[in-house]
Amino acid sequence: MEEIEPDGRSARTTILAFVMMNVRVGTDRDVVNRLRGLKGVKEVYEVYAVYDIVAIVEAETMAELNNIVNTEVRKIESVTSTNTIIAEKYP
Image 1 (cartoon, one colour):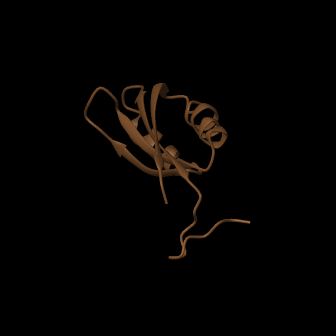
Image 2 (image 1 turned 45 degrees about the horizontal axis):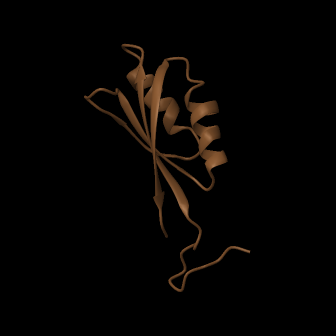
């Protein structure tokens, strides 16, 4: 059974990750649209830096995060590289 805080929020810890990625030239918009459709992807930004896109991903477990990044994000053909920064989001 899920533990609930007095204010009604879940007591579970959520894993928060910032997934930075490079994509093939000219495919930014397509990749952003595809990322927005993935489970666990909460926000997506085109950025002007070393990376082309940053996605904010939430998962309940490291296994779920691994699946999102390694199976879903990296499966997008135009994604050429990723770098994931993991933080813990506390309830």
